Each structure stands twice: as structure tokens, then as C-alpha cells.
Length: 114
Length: 117
Image (cartoon, rainbow over all chains, first blue to last red; front, side, top):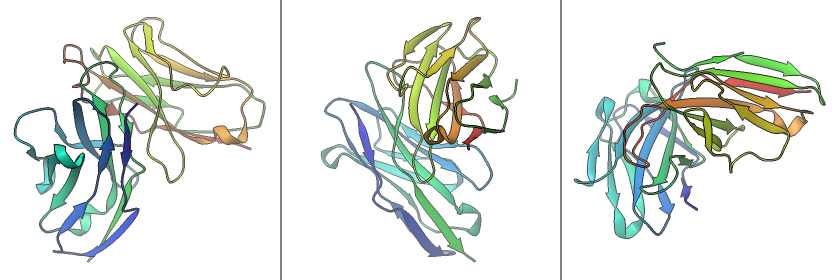
């Protein structure tokens, strides 16, 4: 079965700082990778996804993530965060064969201080 | 509808009672998923429907949990003899047909917060 590790539980940054949130997964086969975001009081929304091709994927609101297969990682980055990026961020993975259910990490809470 | 709709948004019940949570997916989405999110945790998979049938129910924690989707649209998650440990936010998601395995993008509802006293 797949599993996902997000090592940063809570990250606090000032506006304009750069962001990198770690995500590592364990699975021996080919995977699809996702980052979801949950803003305060809102439901989970897709931020970006990787299925195949260019390992550097760009999502909404200036976020990007890089799939490094050798490191089983899919870290999320943003060069300059804004106060409105304050949210909980979840990394998720599923196998490219078999069931469609996603396995989520425990999430990273990002607080951006204006 | 425009999004995934879940009712009720909040449910408080007593230990031992029976609870039903409803999910109305996006129109035309054939796949429907139930997840459970406990405080401080990521969503945990419960069950996945493709059409009317449960394609994967391996995440249901025990036989007190059951879900149906009789007409391939609305789904109901049923919890019997609720326990305090069942308190969580129950999330529903749906995805459209046709994508290759695993490549479906899930659209989530706002969730139903269940509190068992």
C-alpha cells in the first residue's frame, strides 16, 4: 500500500518569504501525485497534480512542485508567499494501476504573517 | 449541481445511536469516494463507488460502517451504534468518468462534522 509523509507539521513565514513543503511517499510502482489545499473554513481544493511528463508541475496561485523519482519526493514550492496562502496543505498519492483512492499525508499547516 | 453537496454539515449524536450522512456528487461524475478526517490528520480513505457498486470498501473500519449508492448518484454513509471514536469530519468526493486508473481528480465537498457524545 502507498503511504505519504509530510515532515513539516506547522510552518510560519513572513509575507514574501519563500516556501518549500516536503512530501515523501512510499510505493514501489508508478504513482500519480497531488497537492490539495484547505483554506480556513473551506473545503479541500486541488492545487496541482503530476501524472507523467515534465517533473516540474505548476499549479494555481504561483505554486509549483517537483517530482524527484529517485528520492520518492514531491515537494511543494512558492517563491514568495502571501498572507492569503495561510492554509493547510496536503500531499496525496495513488498508484497508476489499481484503485483510484488517494492516500493523504497528515498535512502541513502554513501560517503567513503579514 | 455545481459542487459536491454534503448534509448535514454538523451532526451531534449520542453514543450508540445510528447516523446517516448524505453526499450529492457533481452531476455526471460516476466515481464517488468517502473519506474520514480526524483532528490533526489527513483524510483517510473509507470507500469508493464506481456507479452503483462499491469498487473498494477496504477502508471501512468495521461492520458498523456501511455505504450505499443505489442509483449511481447520491450516496449515504451509515454508521450504526456510534462510538466516541467515530467523531470526525466525513468527506465526500466525486470524479468524472473516463480517466485512466488513478488519474482522476477528486472534487471534495465541505464535509459533515460528526460529534459523538
